[in-house]
Image 1 (cartoon, rainbow, N blue to C red):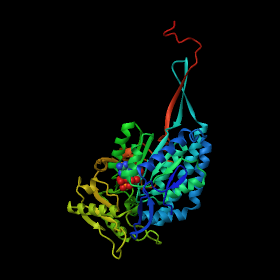
Image 2 (spheres, rainbow, N blue to C red):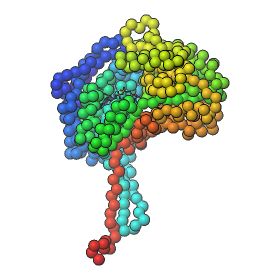
Image 3 (cartoon, rainbow, N blue to C red):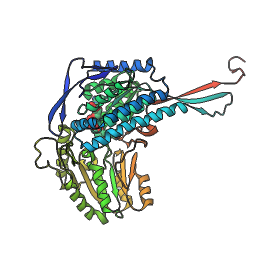
Image 4 (tube, protein in one colour):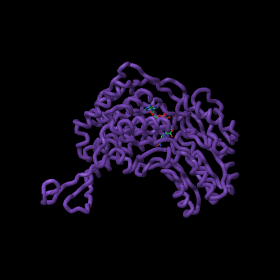
Length: 491
Ligand code: NAD
């Protein structure tokens, strides 16, 4: 396990020597200590990234050259996949097979953006047709500069990859700050990039508190772009900080996503996708479908099967075989989710199952998967993101009512619909005010497809070619090609 900051191609302790604890949420044991970056350390990292961008040659390399580094990073991740997945489980609590899937996806993300970096070479400029024949014009794409990337703890290495891979592909240099509760695998990414020979300063990783290291990144005058994934309140702070220097921003924030199940659906399939939509990663998923709307014809039998299957989910340490629900990511998260369940029942919601600590678990941030019914509309449980294994289920009568309930949220990250009637599913998919819509499933995510939210769920899109756009500026180059004098001042 690494414990130092990765700045300008070297490993460094924090300038004041301070560290913070790494806690395994399955055991509550302190398993490691990691450097807590100061504003001074962040300044060194940003300056290293600045040099690598301005004079180090990274943005001037061909896309194919940058792609070679990205592919080497992908190979480096794959070569250590099981070991890194294990670290992720120890750090975050997620079941090992989920961590293994995440790490494979992270490697795939570097390979995908290597492909897009190569395409930048073959299609670097776009001719612009002008009505005025005395000029020619073209648009070229260029990297924005130094990107400051700040990520959450729910998908540690994957969220790092979603930012680092497209930024590097575009020719940006990066200062990445992982979440303080899950920094282990980001440091492994630095080690892998180092082994891949990535030029110094191109990728810098500073671990530490959001209020110190994160704040220093967003306030730094030499950072050109902020890419953030995390909560809405911190997203607002980032937008405000960016406003001062007109930094470019992309924000991936929270959600309270609906899943509309029509009564022509197969109940077993619906239950399976509802479970996957909310209990995968302990429900700590920004796009989790945490509000389930079931058409009244199948509400009672579906709820019965949902509760049965929820109660059968095997809870435990994510390193144990067969476990499908690990502990929540941290003590703070556990306490917040428990408080949200208590507030829900106090507001009149019914606990159909879960809501308590599972029996036999004295240590670890474990919580039984929870199904809430009778949740009053406009109560916190219905409106606010809980970010835990808690689903609210209610019935609806008509398609119009379902769409209205689904869209009645300040968030708009994701939404899902299930129906055997394709025309209806497509109609509802179009009616959702959300950036990601699933039909007949919930959560599968693909590197090739755009990811991001409407409304207060964010600004911009990650993944796919849209993810690359996040790190590119557009420049027009216009040339006067007429032999005639311009003839404005000098006739
Ligand atoms: P958070 O906002 O508390 O923290 C996210 C990151 O911001 C952390 O690295 C933290 O250290 C940093 N940070 C905190 N204060 C800061 C400050 N003042 N300046 C700069 N950085 C600061 O969020 P979290 O609890 O880590 O993650 C959970 C949230 O993330 C949920 O709301 C979830 O929906 C959201 N999320 C969204 C997506 C998406 O793609 N839309 C994906 C994953 C998580």
